[in-house]
Image (cartoon, rainbow, N blue to C red; front, side, top):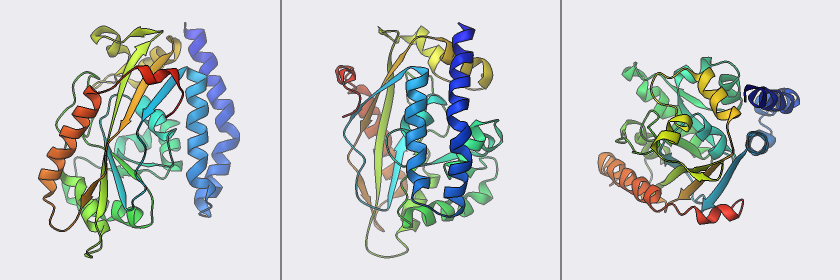
Amino acid sequence: MRLKALCRIVAVGLLALPLIPLQWLAVRWNWRLARGLPVFFHRCVLAIIGVKVAVTGREARERPLLIVANHVSWLDIVVLGSLAPLSFIAKSEVAGWPVIGLFARLQRSIFIERDRRHKTGEVTAAIAARLRAGDAMLLFGEGTTSDGIHILPFRSALLGAAREAMGGGDTPAFVQPLALRYVRRGGLPIGRGAMKEVAWIGDVDLAPHLIGVLSGPPIDVVVNWGEALAYDTATDRKVLTRKLEGDVRALARSVDPAPLARRRG
């Protein structure tokens, strides 16, 4: 089984080798390619590691757009990154991870130092600037990974970035809920026991979890897009956070594995 993981790692490495310098140049010189190349990369990675994604709904066209999703595993980055040009709002530790940190920086992620609350304003301003530039940003509402069965309470602090993106004007920003659920592995439904092999919980070391996912059978995941919500100067941030949390929970409960018969919807 470890041989399978090794083969997949080598294949991803060979894929990344020419794409890393190309993406670096695209980001450096602000080419349009910088947004689309990560989508191509993530889709290829999913094919290599045996993950099938089914999608219900679609990304909102309104801008500025902040997407708020639940968080289960490091695999979420690859799954969601394969759907559309997105940039992630990630914890600062990710920037220092081998390989994954490099990919995150090349996808123009914004990193949060969770233990330094005085820097929240700086992060919010950085997110707002990207939203105003037309980039769709994705925030994991729970702030950490869950067990893949339950959704943790959402945090409201960084939703202030959507308000700041309005620049004090009357035109609203938009916040869109998104839910993902890992539903099958090797063709069998993922129960609590199998979910422990997919969900990356707490202080579990990355390397053994990575090997476990890559050496195992194919995984099926369903992604549900919700309706985008307008966020204007009259919106209460905490009320909006509770609304988004409820919407993501409802989207996760409504996941239908049937769409897995098709690649994307």
